Amino acid sequence: MRTVVAVGAALLLAGCSASGEPTPPPTSAPAPAAACGSPVRDDALPEWARAGFSGDGAGVPHVYGAKGDILAVVFGSPLSSPPGNGRNNKILWVSRQPVTGDPLVITAQRDGSGERADQQVAGGPGPSIVDVPRAGCWRFTLTWSGYTDTMDLVYRTPTAGSSSS
Image (cartoon, rainbow, N blue to C red; front, side, top):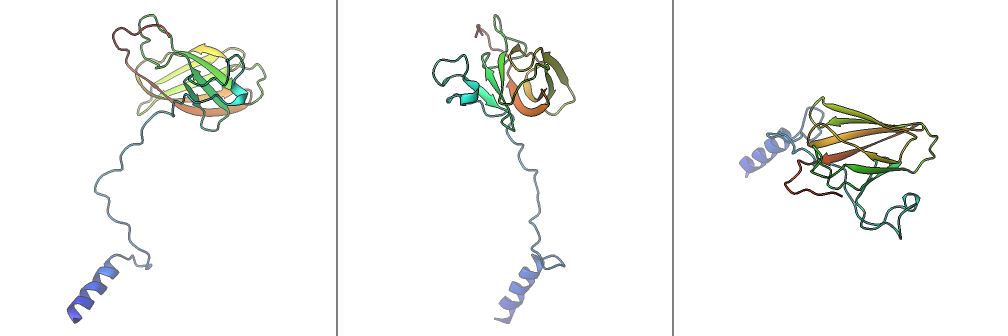
């Protein structure tokens, strides 16, 4: 019985650091990478983004900025690089915040690389065609009228027979 108690005590002590706090388990493999891309939704658009849409805009692919200050309505869904035959990467940017007419500045960086694509939309959030140099997950940093928000957009390699959106 003493052997069982001694082994149990040794195991308990081995699981604690010098401070008495539990020692975290060793990590033998890195944690899996998080899936890239902000969620593309097709539920009803928020009321502040419905101007020009019939009804509540349900069924239209859209992506919220991380802060919720901007919405990308992705008419060119799925986005592709290079754009598919007869297709455009059409995105309507809708700001939840007041717009002053300053341009929407888009800085896109490809996940896992230093590759960048920069673009501006004159007059602020509105209709645009946003192409990037290659397929992958792109972190968009969007700046307009004193606001900044981010989102991750996935651009796929076009498939044969891609048609206009």
